[in-house]
Image (cartoon, rainbow, N blue to C red; front, side):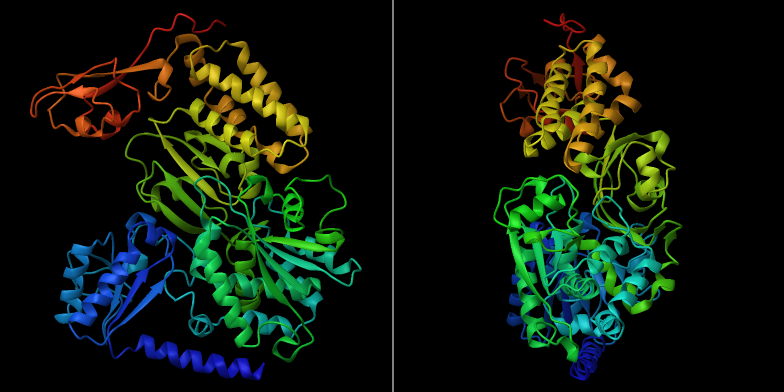
Length: 626
């Protein structure tokens, strides 16, 4: 342990050298979101600029700081000045920024959005005062976007592995006691108290025990786990070490989907660094604790997020859930006691062991302590990764942090495809496990999808149920057959062929699937349908009785036309139309050929003048079974 303390001292000096830099430092957000927006090109251009101008400067790749709508993000720290952040940077803007800061020594005010000082700097506000960042409480994400995730010294400089050192000076039972006092619940969705699973596993006899990190994040629109691993890799691995010590495990496995290549690469780099620093293998930090970590790449099956299906996949079997009991804590991987914790749960543990349970209890609310990360996506002005205290209302998340929607708000889907679709009446609902469950939804792993009036809830319910139906392992009849029948009914409704009796059938099927399915996938699959039936019943009836999709989404119920009085002839729709259905000279009202229109909605979405209308088609079979 003394060796690690020396390395920490060295790492802090190294970090002080970065903070008190004598040469410019360029930080570029290079997690998957930043790379998708062009970060790698910016890194190449920055290195080229530095070389051509013979400048002594560093380029550091950091992870995702959160506001994905601002990507790519580039920060520059000049000697003696605070770090200045620039958003939505392209190659042209980058050159202006580099010229201004690296050559002239002043910020490029036009593109600057915030600084990491305590007050305004040259009129640039503090970064954490930005509307999306100010209401957040960053515990899990404290290092994300600030440090190089591939440099263990930078993690050590941020009190990294202090939680593990504290844990190793306690008994495993005392570590479990701290986790119990902290009140942390599993962040993978179910919200089961972490200490309870640990206690069962700890008390179960067995020469071999396993600790599995569940990084099989499969919800459409969710990226919390990926972002944390990419941006603060060592935090997750330190959490695994703490959990392994507490339950008496000597083997750790990160089960991660193969579609996360950058996260996998950074995990491998971090594990290699841990070996070099004596944080791996036998007698870790001079203790009796032995632990090593391996990576298992999953093939991307949604059902493998379920504990027993995940275990089967690691064992080389088809990823299918099994009935419980016995629970994995008693008989899991290869029949051994096994604990499976979510990425975020593990990433939170170092903070609890470093700062104490009393500190952690300052956040959240009774029964729902701490914070939760969410991916905020959909029809929202400010998309990205956020972290808020449990108990924060949906209204605060959507409007204060997310900036609201451009068109009238309609609904929010919480918990991904297994969650529920909640209407405007729930905006003041506290985001905690029990409150969401009472409304018919779930916390899930943390996906939040915002919808406005251009969203058809029937189509959304069909989309999510179709996803879970295709991802079903097929082992149990309620899930395999029931979800297929529900999808077929929803397809008929969106085609204008539904009947009023379909609504009762959907509800009956949904309730049966929830009660009769073997695992959580089937038990929660009907949630999107049941909640939209509950809160948006009129929209279903409009589809069935009137053949009307007011959101102009269901293709069989609409046809598009140009409103001549509103059309300015800007030709945006002409450029967007893939079939040439829209024509007309610039500055004159356009024409739409319905025989060529494939109802792709492109013209409707690009028109800034509301000159494209989606009219309801009079469907003779509406409300009748043809």
